Length: 205
Ligand SMILES: [Zn+2]
Image: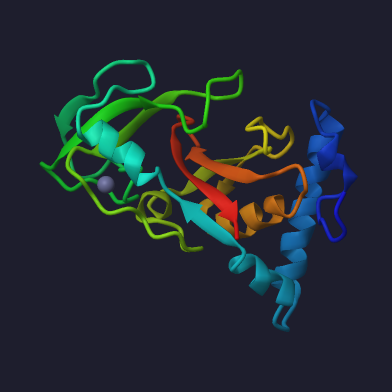
C-alpha cells in the first residue's frame, strides 16, 4: 500500500466481503466530508482536481468503425439518425445532433479478450469527428447525466473489487482521483449507471 492512500488496506483485499466494501464507502465519505467542512483551501483536493485525464476512444479505432470496419463481434456497425438527445458519441464525447447519422456497434474497451474484458453497445458519429481533448473536465455526455457507475481496473485490465460504485456526476472527478491513488487501480471506467454502457476512461496524469 502506497503511503497516503486514503482508502486504507481494506481496498487492496476487498474482493467480496461486505464489511470491506462498506468500510471503503465510509472512508470515501469521510474524505469528502473532511474536504467540504474545511474552510481553508484543501491542497489535497486541488491536487486531485488536476490529477486525472478523461480519455475517449482512440481516433484510429473510431476511424476504423467510421470507415466500415467490423465491431468487436465481427459485425458491421448499424447506421441510424440521431434524435438529438440520447446518442452519446464515444470519440468526441459529444451528443450526436438531431438528424446526424451515427453508428451502433459492439465495443470492447480493453486491449485484448479476457474474462474481464466486457463488450457492450456504444454509439459513435458515423462521420469523422474530433477526438475529445484529454483534460480533467468531464465531457458533455457525462455531465448531462445525474449519476454514473465508475469502476477501477488493474494494470492487467481486471476489475479491482470494491471500487465499483454509482456516484453523482458532481463527485466523479474527486472520487476517481481518490481511486487512482490506490496502487491496485491503473485506470477507471465511466459507465452508464442504469445500463452499464461504457462511456469513457479516466487515467491518472
Ligand atoms: Zn463524435
